[in-house]
Amino acid sequence: MSKAEFSWIKDLISTDEKALGVYLAVLDLRFIYSTKDFESTSHFEQLINQYNIPIFQLELEAELLERKLHGEVEVFITTETFNAFVTFFKKITKYVKTDLVLNAKSRNVLLERIEAEFFETFAKAYKKLWLRLDRIPSEYRKTTALLLRKIRSREIEVFDETISGSVRIFPSGEEGVLLDVLKSLNLPMNKIDEFKLYMVKSYIMRPPIIPAPCFMDDVLRFLGEGVVEEGGIDLKKIIRLRIQSLKGLVSGYGCSDFRFRPVFPSSVLPSGFEGTWECCLLGQGGWGSTYLCRKGNVKAVFKTPRGFEPIIEGRGEPPTVHTKTLEKVRNEANTISKLEHPNIIKLLSYSEKTPLLIYEYADYGTLHWQLSKGWKPSQKDILLIGIQLGDALRYIHSRGLIHGDIKPGNVFIKDRVIKLGDFSSITKLLSTMSYSRIPSTIGFRAPEQVYRDIRERAKELDVENRIDVYQLANTLLYMLTGESIDGEDVNDKLVAEKLEGIPHNELKRLIGTGLAVEPEKRPSAEELIKQLYVIYEKISGKSG
Image 1 (cartoon, rainbow, N blue to C red):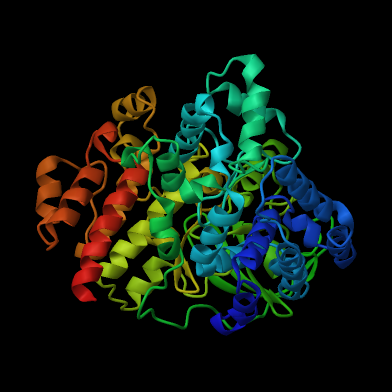
Image 2: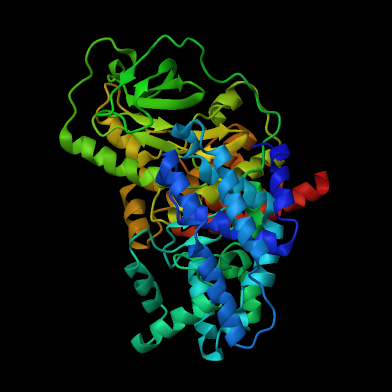
């Protein structure tokens, strides 16, 4: 959807009442209805019809009745709000009904673009018409603040998150997780239900959705808790930077010789991906072969281990795959396919029968490809890359995942936005099937990937994910100086020498901290983003 195509949304949110309805629809579409709801037109229309019958209207009318019973004069749920909700819900189908193979999967990206574009309008309406913080009794205010701080710091696991920071705290059908979350707040058992009721009545929570992190500082101020920066980054500050475009990129990435025409039965690829594709070879790396494939207007990237090229190219037979190894690949692929973040390359699907992964197509290639073609990123571009990669790391670390192989070749660029891909957890499994062994990424390894004693200490101190911080700092160093420091060679003197070529002192110090030998001395991904953002703002002010 281009900016011009946002015009109908501008008309739809012309009042606070309408903006509230659209924002509630965005949240419901983002969190409650999964992409599978859009895979058939009949199912989708059934959902639309559901919102034409009185279910949602009854909820709104119940709210109005409750407010009248409490003697409240103002009416904040109006017909205008309801109509805007339904209109948006219906109209958004225009952008997901065609090419369902990919558009159903990319619906969340579209919703995030809408949310980022109009977030200030949505936030104003939500805070003015929906949040009712005065309904929280004084005895529960500290507990409410504790809940929000734990979500911000990710002490409470988050299962999904929008670009503005609204979160889903338990997966579909697992309401028991909410009870565990509330127990973690040290509430007496006989108070848990009452606390939940007040969270719902104040609209801090719409189970399983908690939009409040979008307005964290406002809520904490109301609760008398003040605003403490150490609790975590303010996501509002980087909403737009997550999808900020890079400048001056080299075009022309891809291939054009679509000589291979694989036919995949539904027994090999899931619904929507079966059938005949046209493919051309994009490249071959240490562990696998990568193809750009198209079917109609849809483009996707197919990846398979070396030796398994017959799956795509059709000549010969691919090797036999050990069942247990393939099961491990499926498990990892299933985990990665659930990641939803604008700076992570989307794993669209995978085969249950053979080692084949299907990713979204990054039209500007990788960071390595761009640099090799002569792209010269400015210092501002490099900071933006650091912020986008860092936020992807913050997101995966909050879910207990580690990337483990961050380097320019695994940093993709789609629509001029950075996207992290090729998680080591899955590429290592695929490399065990490959005819070509995966090479160690010498030059970008963290010390704990080389030295056992450092690895053991990182595990003991629970800072294993700082591997990614070292590799991100190393990637930033490489872009700024053309050099990197392998974990086998790193020491304070060498780091100081390599940093000499960086003119900005704050950035020099930050990268130096990220390259610390001891993992516990490196910042977390969250801390790194905060500091990169401060430097980015200073440089933007000077250049702007």
